[in-house]
Amino acid sequence: AVLAPLRTFRQLTHPAPRLTLTAEDPAVASAAAAENALHSASVVKFTVKCCTGLRPRVGGDNTVVPYVSYQFPGFPVHDTHFARGIDPAFDDCCEFPLARTTALEQRLSKTRLEVSVFDDADVDMEEP
Image 1 (tube, rainbow, N blue to C red):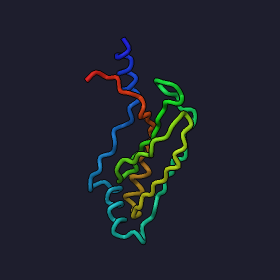
Image 2: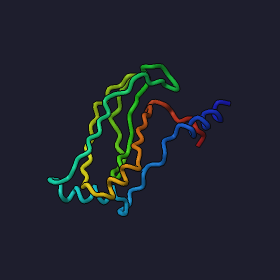
Image 3: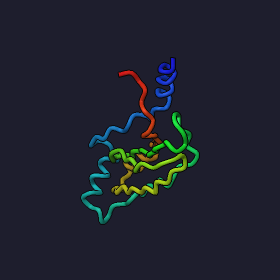
Image 4: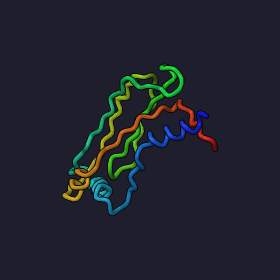
């Protein structure tokens, strides 16, 4: 009786599919060009400081083991370290070197950065 509502909830809360990295993507091309010319690359710095007031689906407030996951266009998925509790501090900083191009700026102006918080202690209860 619990599994059907859980499956429905999980379907609603899954993040959007991760970006596929292809050489034709202006963000991928820009990241590759920046690797070859780090001295002239621009850098986007993304910092995840903390979360406040997380609500665990299961267990108590002290059982939460949250982490944050996101993917900046042109780069692989980045996960923060694991933290503890409902008000975790991550202080995670990631830098993304990019060669600025018109195609990149157009790509970034049409893209949203999705940031998801997951609880590593939340056991997946779906049937195999």
